[in-house]
Image 1 (cartoon, rainbow, N blue to C red):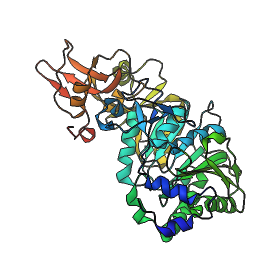
Image 2 (cartoon, helix red, strand yellow):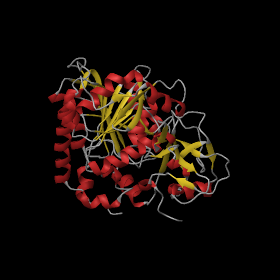
Image 3 (cartoon, helix red, strand yellow):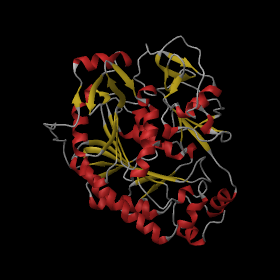
Length: 454
């Protein structure tokens, strides 16, 4: 892997940059693989979890990269394949917020969903995560990954950053993993090297300014902004921190970082705002930068619930049909949009209605399904959720049958049951089948099926 000379020269003044070691690690061809477990789906993947990632409570390095696509637990949302450096978001989030309190959290540039699934695992059940992706084609994979993760307190949106100004002073935390020149991913994605240029860095810097300015009104007073990039360039990192401090009334925040982690703590030139940079020749992971700031101005949100909403509460009869499918005491309020039913934490009713009124929502909470006659046609999201009831008929599948199911092929099962059943792998829901007298219908989503055969 040949790194461009103008790129290496641009890093000479970046604190912690060691040219020889940096070039050497990029030429080594080494690839780091890491995963983060879903704490709400207690299962151990079928590959060795050798070393923990020191700044992550659920993160592990793998000795080699398995064929993840053929692991049913990945499709069930039992873990997420995530780059180790990005998992440091856990430290930034925990050290700057009281996680025991209900929080409104926005992940603004969220696809494909690594940071959103991490945030959902950290927040309380009464907290709200709004996970947004501005590019429509990328918002579908974000929705898929969050559906598999199974949490009910999530809204997936597809909006431009400026749309969030309509939710003034609404969020306690805004996470912006900003679009950037991508130099931190050169080792993982060599094709990105050809796209790097000083002009591209400047273009990204301008885009980062616009994103930050557009979303700033949505952060409430004393709220926390967590800003990150996968770029080494000071123009996209420290200089953006100085720009934020120049433009807005924000106080930079320091984080406690174990010296043994070998993360490089830096400060911006003008305002001495702390930032944290990850070099792949120093840590076991890719290039990354992160910083936190607290908003001093603004106020509390003053949003009133809308008089009318596209969401309607279920009738008593409809609720009676749905409730047996849900875990008792899950604290859900049931809503209907058209004929689709969704479950969302009752404690977040006002927040849900406010977001649905102001933004384009792809999904909210857990999609339960729809009522046909006096029975429920369940949605796949319910099958992989953490609110599914314990009384549902389940069918355990071994790995070969689970893979057949995930390819949307015919699966042969022994069961005297007729009707809907939840197929599971190692005790975790994969999806629905409907058992009929002479056949079994596979209801795995066609768009998500495994296409590879080996």
